[in-house]
Image 1 (cartoon, rainbow, N blue to C red):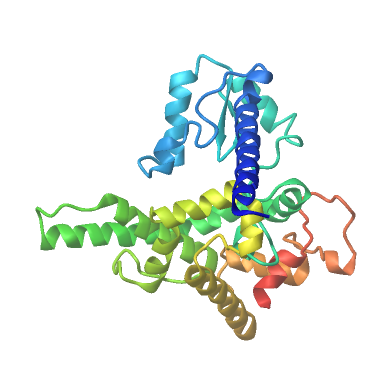
Image 2: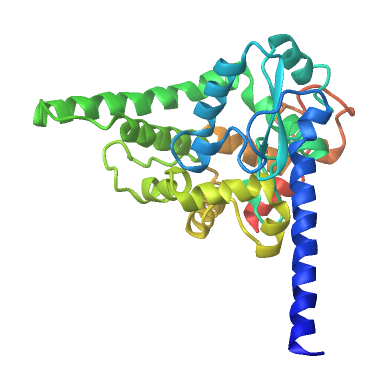
Length: 317
């Protein structure tokens, strides 16, 4: 084959590929119009341009979109070529989250309980996995149990008040970064309620827990790209064995949970926090007193009972 014929062949293949891409882009851009739904934005980032450019959070983008198009019951948009239905009408929303929840149960987010345990949470899960996990966790959030944990939250808030007073006394005219302060409070509350760990992030913003948490939640292009892949390009996630959290964050928190469980079980420590409930669920298969599903002495479908399988057992491996 001569150079001229090879060049001609390559040009033909390239032209064919570009034509196929153009046809796909056009057909996808007509996705919502073919279904009689008002289509907003292009197929690449839809209404999420400011989100992609890190100018606004996802919540702010959706809020602005709702305010602009709330006169419409529904609109359609896209993200990375993926169709997204935006529902504005309260009655339709009620239908989706009640009667049609089986159809709209999934959020389209990637998760893998085996390779990436942190991704296997209620926000990401779908279908039977979501239903099973929700059934397991629902008894952990009864009014009585939440009230019991509330005292721990109050302790963290009391430390925040003392810290604010201390900073005002030392520097009366200093400006306080309220966002950072609330993030430190959230770190203390979450770790105290869930793991029983006193992080003291409010008093010391340089604690390891706060630094690791920043890697996960502070805005950055790499972190946005990570969430973008989890929401839209699942095949890429599987191919690259990508995880929801950065490796340092993922390893640190999984090890913290494993170590805490091992210490409590070895020393018979009880703190009546969320982790205690999960340890009880792991060991006894239920959060109901006097019922042990592992020994088969509970009827199938008994309200408030839950089964335990691989999700929590992985924390011990």
